[in-house]
Image (cartoon, rainbow, N blue to C red; front, side, top):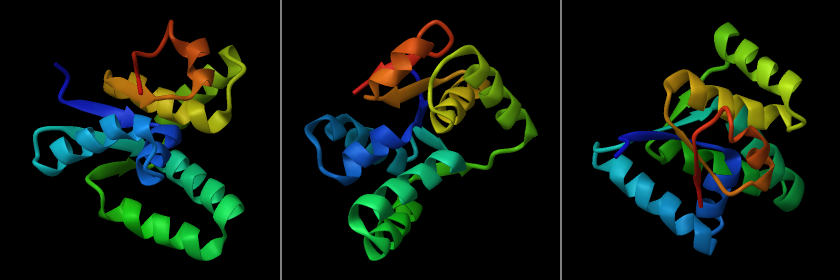
Length: 133
């Protein structure tokens, strides 16, 4: 069993919005809180969560969600040169959103599963180990 994973924005939003499929994400976060599991997310995907929330629910809610995420046991990974180039390679190869490529690139770089429910990631299944919620 893996002891770490990458969340894309879809997975964390499912948790934050209390969706049924967010239950597995919640369990992973509880495991991470206990120190038995590590959860990673690209800063690009954090920005995606922020802009989606702000667009749909306004500035105050976006700021609230940002504060909530910062309290979760999620390690936010900066988009350095290597991660950005890996994401760009995926974007060149597949017709998927650039932000999704950062989640996938982080998963590849760390050699761990990417947790998502976003059907767009089906296009990446040959390159990324996916854990579907």
